[in-house]
Length: 277
Image 1 (cartoon, rainbow, N blue to C red):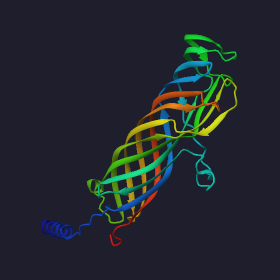
Image 2: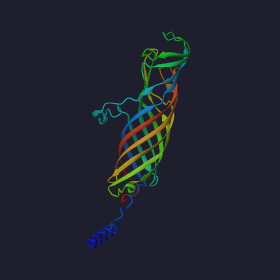
Image 3: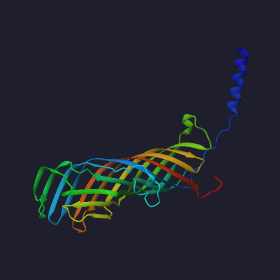
């Protein structure tokens, strides 16, 4: 019995010692592109509205994202921007560092019929005219509607680190690699703001409205060297001092808030320097 055990042990050790080491997959010089979807949450925000006959601030306004029901619209060529989407193109500066540019297409919708505090003055010939000092007001449709729904477009550049971690969990396969990525980004906000103030004509146009910064981390599963699935968590700060609200250029809004975004994306990477790698 002891002899049989020793023989099996020696055979196992011999097989293990002869196991081929899987060569590391090189990323340097590769381009990558991905497309996917997100869910986002936002902190409460103070929103200031200014115009010729009004200047008031709504405090601690609640807003949510707007998720699209899962239908063929997620893949339809003419409707793929209806959901909350993420698209990015990037380049591996080395095996471990990437630089990329992309758009985080979130949707930001001020919750209607909420009651908030208001400060300031309105003198625009509306039922809401008056001087306000920390008073309560209900956000009915006839007063204020505000959405960044096509969308809250965070156009940003990201710099990230990329590390393979599959070996830490015994995942040693040439066709599958598990990676972790983390880094930071910065960019501009180019929303298509859907706004209606005091029942005036609705405004719904793209406009550069501010800037943002963000940090994030995620897991990446690469298979067959060229394809991957990735999930990221991203936290950021957005400041928009110049939001257009009506066709009158003197009317504007401003706000700042933080966001937390969860994504799932699908992509591909390909080498543009050495086709043999």
